[in-house]
Image (tube, rainbow, N blue to C red; front, side, top):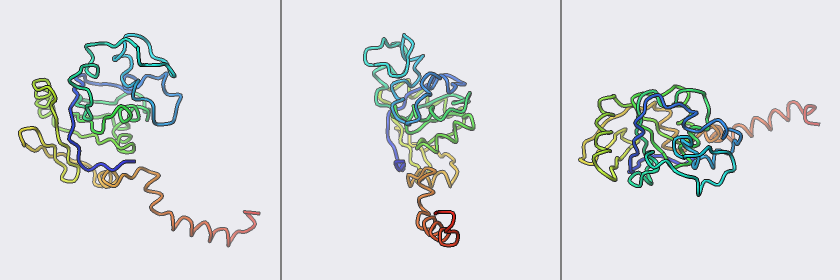
Length: 212
């Protein structure tokens, strides 16, 4: 998992409440567990005019021109601004995989579904909870200025607006440590690789009959 310390990027507004995981990545794409390749099908039913299927060439699929991710001003966005209860519905880890594969590193919302919130941290995405009034203000600013960018600084736990104003946010310190150091569950385990190998050797020496 890549380290996350600071990001300055374009913001894309997802101005809908209760966006569920089936909207983020529809159920037909859940057959793969590779973690990659889901970006082209992020928000598939909202993004395209036709019905997407696994293995489909998305290059020439008809786009819904009014959908936010299809608008030129939001191309290259790495910060998704959302409404309350983002990521509700089924507990599919494919949802943060799709967001990450598309290019999103941060999601800002007034609230998240718990399982989705936890899965974001495990897959290198920083979900930030802000007061609804602040989120409303960020939506207004995003719509008003093409190419609107925010800086998200995980070291200081601050969001910096274009005018220099800073917005503090809270994040669990253990999760913050993992993101800052690029540690997923496997990475955390491998920090103890020497101890694990020493235990294995000791266990084999004490119980040789188990390994014959």
